[in-house]
Amino acid sequence: MNESPAVEQQPDEDSGFDPRSIERPDPALFRYYVLVSLLGGPISPLILLPMWFRYISLRYQFDESGVSMRWGILFRREVYLTYRRIQDIHLTRNILQRWMGLAKISLQTASGSSQAEMSIEGILEAEELRDYLYSQMRGAKNEPDLTQSGATATDGSAVQPLVGTGTSAANSQAARATQALEDIRDAMRQLVARQDAAGDNQ
Image (cartoon, rainbow, N blue to C red; front, top):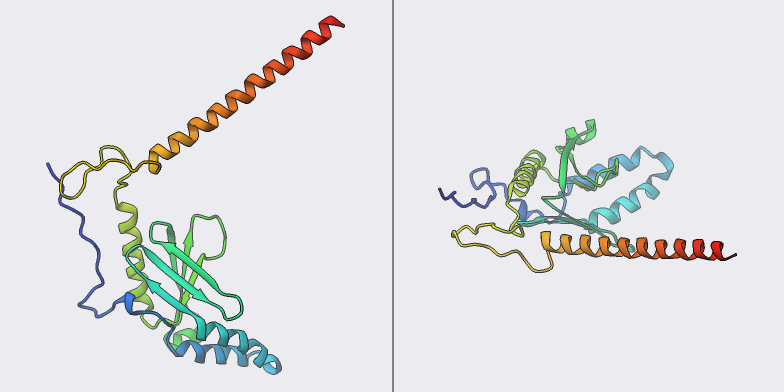
């Protein structure tokens, strides 16, 4: 029995939310930065300056395979996460962020770090974006791995595994590692045998 092809997940047109249209944070984020910097008292300008640089350079991009985030003036930084790598999504708000309609979406991976791999802020539709990321994350984890032998394309034809990728590449690397260990073992045995022979001759 043939299974129906997987339907590509598209942005919810009924809600009018399209994450692909998000490129920059909302201006409310800079107002939030100003209020936060004012809590520093006399050193407020020193606190606000890096926040200003971050705000004017912050860019997002959401596509079919993942999300990217880049920022920085003097030192540019860029983080790209595929939906398959995302393990958990947290949405947090402090009192000031709730008042201004803002939130922070933290994306965590299986890297083992206690800190978020990416923190998305300055998005007014935070709940909608979180739900979108959840759906993309689940969809990416449920997608079949076409590099496995015997995989079937959506048109019913057989898909051949890619040469040098997927399982075949992993098996090739494992075979090379095993051969190297066996060579080391044989060399050690020969060395021990020579030392034993030298000891017997003395």
